[in-house]
Image (cartoon, rainbow, N blue to C red; front, side, top):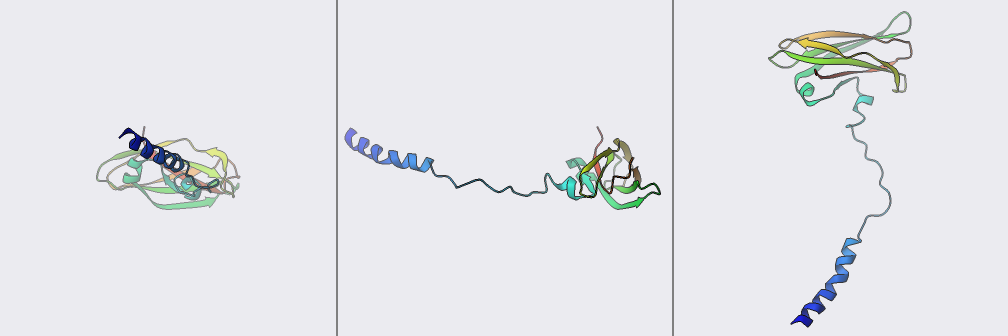
Length: 139
């Protein structure tokens, strides 16, 4: 009986080794997802789940000032039937979408039930041509 078991085991052993060696060839191309590129492609970004549930943007306005700096006004709306507190800031970017190093400080915004508030941001220098308004739950 032990001889039969040894023969079966010896026959299956190479299959086990060959099955473990199966692999797909070559390096893989990167997958493009919006998880990490959203902030580079969108003008209004909600950074966490509570903000995604509670806040929306009803409008963005941008205009160049006389000195070449960019001014942005974001209409931030509370979607809930309760008062919420969020933080808002703006990152100004050059024409190619790279940060110019000009990022506004986080502003705390208290929104009453279903209220919409306009938040104004002004670039510190004329390098900013694009922007991203970011919203997160207040900490």
